[in-house]
Amino acid sequence: MNGFFKLVSTFQTQAEPAYCGLTTLVVVLNALSVDPGRRWKGPWRWFDESMLDCCEPLENVKKNGITFSKVSCLAQCAGASVQAFRANESSLDSFRSFVETCASSEDHHLVVSYDRQILKQTGTGHFSPVGGYHRHKDMALILDVARFKYPPHWVPLSLLWEALNSVDEATGKSRGFMMITKRAKPTCFLFTLSCKDQRWRAMCKYLLEEVPHLLKSRGFTTVEEVVYTVFGSLPADVASFVKWIVEVKPAVNGPIEKVDRDETERLLYKSKVLQQLRQTRALALITKWMEQNSVNSPEDESLQTAILQACCQGAAAFRGSNCYSNVKCFKKDVKESNVTSNGARGEAVVMSSRVLVDGCEQVIDALVPKRPSSGNVGGGSVLQQDGIDQVTLEEDAFHPTTRDLLAVLLLALPPSTWEQIPDLSIHAEISRIVSRKELPHELQLEVEHLFEQAFFVSRSCTEEALTEEALIETKN
Image 1 (tube, one colour):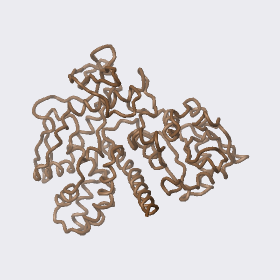
Image 2 (cartoon, helix red, strand yellow):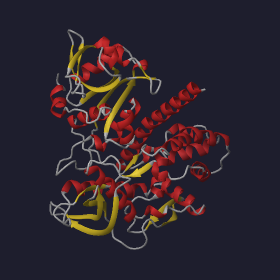
Image 3 (cartoon, rainbow, N blue to C red):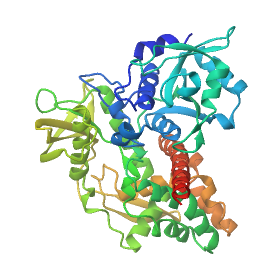
Image 4 (cartoon, one colour):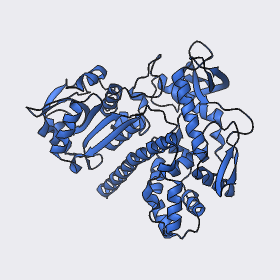
């Protein structure tokens, strides 16, 4: 019962009938003290169901619930480490081992996806955390997040396993369990993958299925040709799949005059990651490809536009709105703060947007790393140093642009992407360029985070494709 007290202190009732997956994650993430990277209400940083929308729109979850793979994707996206297992790929003995490990720990928690009917309960698929294990009786304690239906209850482990080892009719795949832990390093990421926009599926299919076939079928003489092949046929609007994270918060007591120490550290960390990315050969190759093919960045890529969109999303979340498409935004202004709460000279731009949400006016502050200003945002050129292309950027290019998103995506692709390249020397060179082992530590963590996200996204992509095929066969 070691993990019980952490879980019960954050235990809550699901806010919607189909929110069991989201509420289970909220309970576990808060029990692990995972930092959501933004404030919930007042000064408190606390997970709420409304924050868990990076892998599936909340409107869809509210209507249809959420799948096993999307829950594991959400946990990863929220900053936790996840080990997910389908029951048909595991065993009762292995499950028992995980149950006992998590019940005996305060920093490992187990989430189960099961069929209620096998437990003689009303309903079908459900998610809940496991709060304890009785070794002598071989029973697990289910902390049911649908507390309006059932209080916490003990279940024979063999019966719970049977409920896990059932098929989810929505996906045609087995249910299962996942162990969730806190990352060793506090969460502070610059980039994330997003599955909210339906276009992510085309992106996922192209990168994980079509690209390896493209590379196998063509002869290459340079790594530039490899990169141009990969990105030359990339589906439009990559920004719908790879996004950069902006920290926003409601403005309090008028214009902001300082940022606190934690905020400053996060801003400087993200700035460092961006600078490291811009010194990579991957970024140089992307820049060269964009310039030679006259690939222009989207018109709405300006910092002002990006911040306004982030403030709109933040305002909707702070108001408890599940959809920000109806949020009206107007009037933009910029306020700068160069002093931190600990007396050090900070480097941040605070950009405030005045927005209208449900008829109520809000002022939202967005925090962006600052660098000395001169020239055009996102500008740059390619130079050669020791035979290697390097990118020199204008001083005020302090926010990610399309070339940064494409470069970090290139680095995060699985190593298997390049295995089918016929020419061994080209294969070796592109492998060196995208090798995570050669990256600076902070950028390496960033890329590994995206790679792990991509793994869960690919599982979701495959799962949804199989579901669609099954539905087509059923209709036929």
